[in-house]
Image 1 (tube, rainbow, N blue to C red):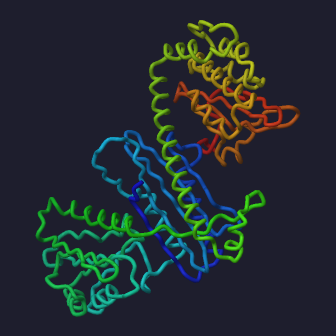
Image 2: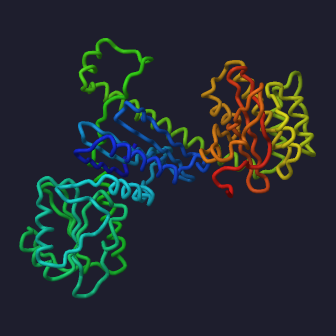
Image 3: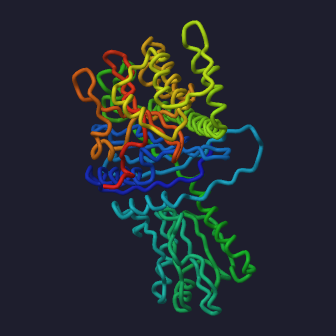
Length: 494
């Protein structure tokens, strides 16, 4: 696992109100960029800690991109301990191949930089009595230049300082004038815009041989600076030099900023308490060994989640390839795999002429599925998708239902079982669909209204079809509630 981005902001004298405000910012950001009904294959969002009596909030987003040799895991942590509020965000890359090839980390996604900006606005944070912002501090007077030099030497400074001395003599293009961009929260940026400001800066600074057209990167503590003379570079290399500086700071931060040490989750009445650790955990100070063990377990879970995300993406790609092959592949799968569960023989289904015929075959050959009258009505009127594809999905779902009813799998394993059968299964619907269009998902079942949120997805555009299912935990029955087009959700017109 390779850390490619790390940022940690700590603010003192904070209270629960600020912690809740930060959690709301993170949650709103997640809903904007990772809505439930728009997450593609290979993307998962998990909130691992968020209970009301837990000072730690943690969200993890795992993404596996197409043709990528690494899986990216974004971890966001908000923790309030002893009136110190910490916001930590980091991206970890997990390799998924055995090839020895050069690896270049991806640039920081704009959505991540935007989240950091929103956090800094919600809870302003200081570094050496200087607010951390996204803006560039412009120095025009001699006093402004002296203030920059004094801030660089501040002993409590934790973030690097970038000082760009504008080439005001030649009117050359400046590099850092539009904001911190991906470096927001990771660096202070100053721009010296006049000869007067440069004189003030030189009078208090320890740098020599600097002048217009220079960029100084000064790390925290007593370290050697990185100085670049832009005038000495060909114009074609200026953009590459800017990228190098940004990448240098990002890589340095990723290798320097430690993960925040957080207490273990609060115990519940169901936890098994080790008597030997009772005394060390009851005095208000969390057990150090226990915290380290939890971090190791979380790292293992993250690796497994990355592997699942990559496998999910690969299965989706293979599923798309199968769908592109058309009806012949569907018929072959139906004949050789899906209908093998029937007693005594494997039917030779060469073609299904209509949805009515597909539903008739499904009712006859899927004994572990219950077909609601709404499913028959909506499915019979469906036009566009190949009936054999719908029949194939129903027969595969029948096998999952058999395993669930027989106790071979539990309710939490249904999604994995569907994936193994080649089904694109989604366990729930979006909050918007649940709140605004709930009637679309309701069916009458055993004398009460139930919501059939779980559904199978297949096809796109004219070939799109959704099969909504209700899993009755009391009777262990699987009810097919609806077969048809996409029901209304957040993307529907009001």
